[in-house]
Length: 218
Image (cartoon, helix red, strand yellow):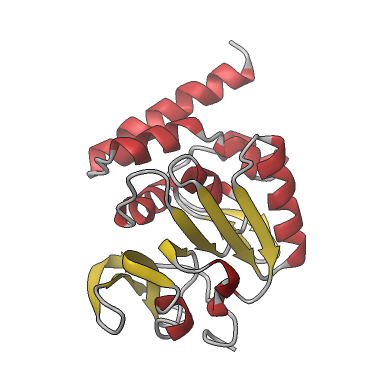
């Protein structure tokens, strides 16, 4: 068996045992997670760990999230296909690739230039050409391309950044970890109900690197 076939089998197993068995039910999310080659988004020396049930280091003090968490956060956006999504904390580009299989446009912001450049190269090489990556402060969003139908934040914030809430389209969802910088956070889903009304739901405990920026941790 060649290595690519081995990864395909591991990916299918990941979808069945790490996602579907834990309650991820969206056909769009399961299809996207089964399509994106996670092994292309991690350092070469860690490829054998690509489908492990946990996060992995990708350099610059950052990680690629556990597959289940990527699926959980993506499912929480309630995408139906064709939306415009903002992805904060590009990291390796893996979550942006998953989102790009469902959304029509993904705008992804990474504060570490080295990671932003590498993610952009990987996404382009793998054919995810509906993703735009830029280096910047994710806490202030990407106002030129608002409103977004969904916003996903892969870093823990001290509070939900107002700038992100107000870049949501009415009816859109923002999924973000909120809480302590160095311990467990609460994964929150904020839904924009009207111009000035928002609803917040708690999706459970998670642990992410801190969200650094003007409206995050200093």
